[in-house]
Length: 459
Image 1 (cartoon, rainbow, N blue to C red):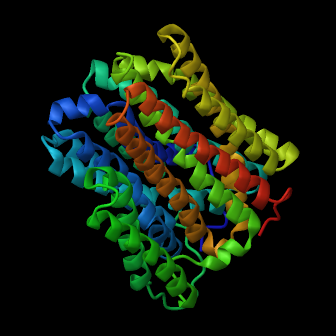
Image 2 (image 1 turned 30 degrees about the vertical axis):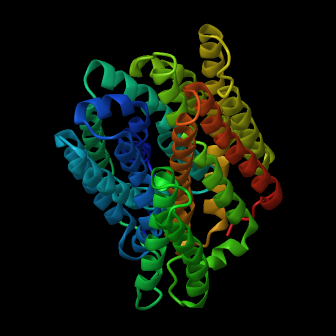
């Protein structure tokens, strides 16, 4: 139930964008400052990689829960809960002297993102309509997708000239600004459909399964791919997925409503979103490679992604306009294809320093152009295809795809990179890690071509 006489404002949009950017300020910036954090805290690379993926993992595990709660107890309330968690999590990272506060802070920040992402999309749908909603969502996409470009550059710059902890001080400031800007937005809820029973069983199965998959991917190389613990993790992962799908299909108040996936447009947007977010592994592999293999500083590696930042920010609004002219499918296809080409260029590590630097810079530009073109049409397709009384839950599943795609994409890319490093040069390792992301982009393109219809009917 929302205040029907309230119309969304630019102030509300900017508040939500600032809130969404807090996710990228703490989550994505980490991929650009791995050597600095490792040197300062004295933690092992494996521990640091776990900490990096934990935020996306916990976001992905709880985002559907938070989306459903936002529908029932209030989308603004859940946004505020997320912003408070963001402040606490960032503060723990500022104070961290070892791995304990680092890991706790990253978990809290994952829970923060789980609250902010679906609740803010639902607020956008509640208070904007038609082209105005598409405009609002394109700005939301600037915070979400464009934020990755902003923080890849900002993170490297801040880490080099101010110290990496300042990244999280800025994250706290943005969260507080977001709270102030959206303070006048009325509460928004879905119409009550009787007593709500939470699916604790589904959540438990989901968490165990996701943790097993994540540990299998991130620690398989360390444990040994044929060791007993690794085999047990693989079995738990496979069985967990099967049991979860069976269990949820029989539940009335399921954690994930599989009925939503009967809509091909929603399914196509969500699956391609998962796969294209998995391409985020390119950022950590490319940034680590140019620092370790080519001697770049964090600031210099951040400069390489400047074109990515500019391209994402400029193309998000272009993607919105293209969608209004051609429908959502074409810009989603073009975006995935351009991303694939851009990432593939970064795998050309046999090239000499200057030429490779230019190729990576251009590759990042294409990467950003592709993501920017894809972002708004994909998000709007998911939002448009979802019923009004389940928009928080549907947004939660869509953003769960983003977070889990990001977590598994980074984990798989880093695992491939580090595994190959033990048997070959850092240059070959980078090729292997980046090629993994080319495969993700190709699968995303295929999923759009197969699943997304040429026109998406409003629900």
